[in-house]
Amino acid sequence: MTIYVSQLFNNSWQNSEQYFYTYDVLGFPETVIRQVWQGSTWQNSLRRSYSNNNYGTAQLAVFEIWQQGTWVSQNMFTKAIDDYGNVTSSNAYTWNNSWQQNQDNQLEVNYNYGLKTLRFQGYRAEAGFTSMLVGVREKPGTASTKVYPNPANGKLFIINTLLSSDPLDIHIFATDGRKVTELRQPAEPFITLDLEKSGLREGSYIMKISSPEGTSTHRITYLK
Image (cartoon, rainbow, N blue to C red; front, side):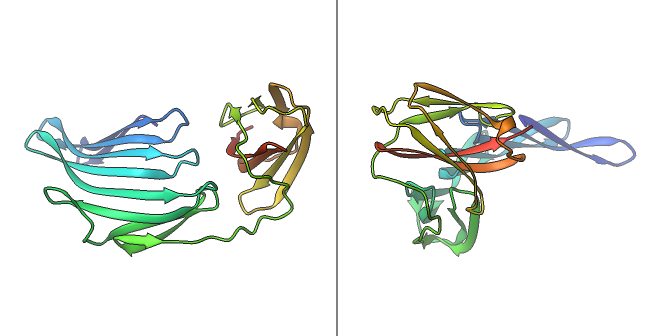
């Protein structure tokens, strides 16, 4: 969605509000601008800007309001995120000539690769996590793989730049942690997975690609 327009009916359809959306290269929201209908023209109202990690969790979110012809800062939210997409701290700030962390707001703590969210009232939250996912062979390191397109509706392509001749172990998990399929692929620079033949249903999954060099994790969406 790039534009959303809301109208109210009062003998005829009348404009009410509209939203404009932009997205980052991974398809996650980057900016949201709200305008309201005043008189006979659209007027700016709110703007939200996001900086996301690879799981779609906003590491930085800035909220602004439109005042006297310019955008004015209102709130800012920051998150510290571990390698598995879990938010280890969430912070809220309010603008008062400078960013101050002394007023309560709704905080979000995301976990399970950003797929689940807890909400709190306050200005700082800290969290710790224990993984319940077992049976996946992992070694420390940085595995350099990329997957595209995402969402995928047939074939999924893996770009492999690992400096290893060992085969890749590919495990696909449902969002509740259940392993739904596993594959072993030769360590080639470009790998093609046929999702139509994998038996996957439509939905979101977590893909782990492992080799002796390390493990990379990707959130994928399959649309038939």
